[in-house]
Structures are given as structure tokens and as C-alpha cells.
Image (cartoon, rainbow, N blue to C red; front, side, top):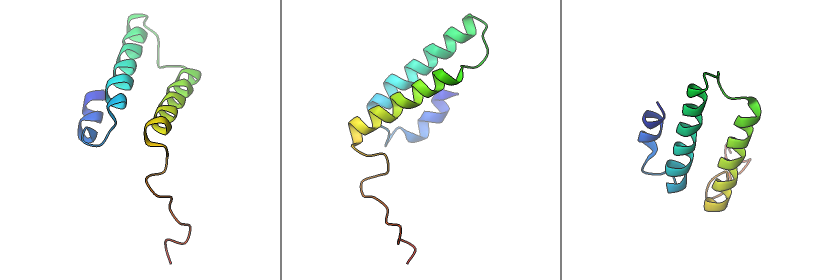
Length: 75
């Protein structure tokens, strides 16, 4: 399922996102499956989100794109 989600984005996702986070999520879900546990706890999801945001800021220097959107763009 993760591969089908990432596949359409391969041309524009940073390499760390494809390699690191995909591998980490697959290992994490595998560990939960082996332990017969349900979905991840909310704290685990917050950690993954913080990691993704931090790495995006590190590699792209922004979360919103190359140029900030203007609040007057509709004018």
C-alpha cells in the first residue's frame, strides 16, 4: 500500500522521504503486525509527523513552497 502511495510522487519527492520514511513506516507496521497490536498510538504518529516536517524544513528550507503565497492572490 505504501509503494502505491509513493509511486506517483517519485519524480518530485526528496530521496530521504522515499528511502528513510518509507522504510521506517514499513518496519514500524511490520513490528506492530508481529506483535499483533492494532494501529499506532497517537504519540507515535506525532513523532513521525515531526520527523517529516523537520526533514522537509532541512532539505527544502520551507513548508509552503518556493515562494510564499500572497493573501491578496485572488485580486
